[in-house]
Length: 89
Image 1 (tube, rainbow, N blue to C red):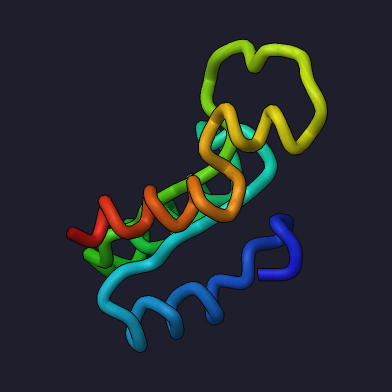
Image 2 (cartoon, rainbow, N blue to C red):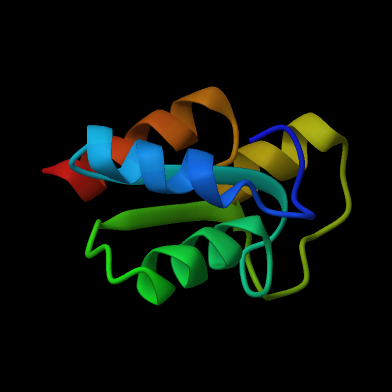
């Protein structure tokens, strides 16, 4: 998706039909973010597709550079890859 509002419901539903699972990734809070919107669309249309939502956790992130912060919370490339691989295992 290129934007959060309005959600592209047709795209979300098409992806749900074409894939066994979906992953959302955002540089925003997970709770109430774009991934939550994807979950809501899927549930409203009774599409039981597993979704992994990745984004900022709901706690204070210590100060540092963007690179340091992303690494700390696992939103760097290695962390994202590891979270997806673990979730799919």
